[in-house]
Length: 93
Image (tube, rainbow, N blue to C red; front, side, top):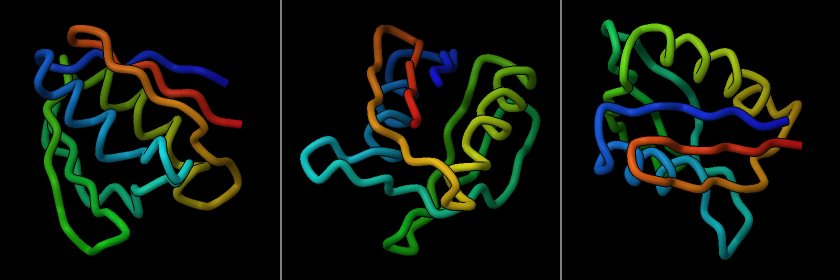
């Protein structure tokens, strides 16, 4: 299953792609979505650090949180992320 998430800009897209998936170890690094403020999401990582990512709008936040929920619950795993300009394509099994 794939989803495309549109971020505020290229920097936010690159940050999102790098924070949620580590390619070399094929590891999902996101631990949970802590909070949502309009078009900004706050996520917690496995190393207990907290990061905020600004998406294009509130609908992108909803798409991302719905998609990532099964990953957080360990029902699915992210297998690839790819950032292109302001968009991140995320694939899960």
